[in-house]
Every structure is written in C-alpha cells, then in structure tokens.
Image 1: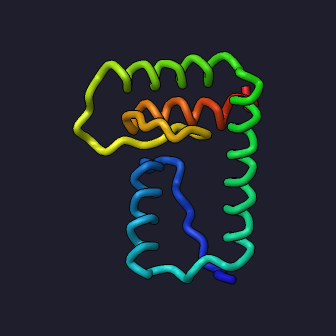
Image 2: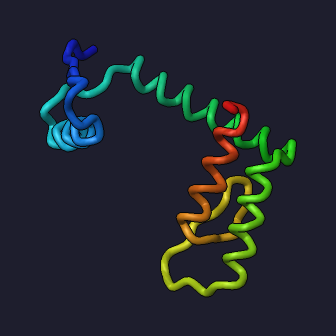
Length: 111
C-alpha cells in the first residue's frame, strides 16, 4: 500500500492539480494503487451501474427523456464519428448523447 499523498491547496486551480496528478501517475511517479483501492473502484463502479439499471427499469423522468432524445437524434442525424451504445442497449448513438443519458441514469437516485 502506498503512503504517498498529494494535497491540493485551496488557493490553486483544483482541475489543474488533478490533471497534473493524472499525468504524473501515468508517468510512473507514484506507486501503483493497492488492492484496497482497486476493490473500492470496483465497488463504486458496480454501485453506479446498479443505480443506472434501476433508474432505467423504473423509467425515471430525466434518464428516460435523455435516452429518448439520444435515440431520436441518432436516427435523424447521420454521424461520421464513432458511435457508442446507451446503457442496456445495442443501439449506437453519438458519444455526447450517450454520456448525458447514461450519466443521468447513474446519478438519478442521488437527487
């Protein structure tokens, strides 16, 4: 387990600090995360997917509307870019539409 910590000062740009940390991490300047960190990431990921599936199954308002918009937009607008599926679907839509619809489903129960 790593004993390294990075403190981001309050008076500095947090986004830049996080970005620099990511660059430094990928460059190997920090130790690999321990098993506990990987387990926490897996737990958070599974929780977010379960929330999304539940929100979609319950047909909650925002995820349903944003999902429908993504599907309608995709069928009306040919897009030369690579497309991506919506959660629980094999239908491909523009990435930005999938991000909004999928994130809405993941975060629905946090409201």
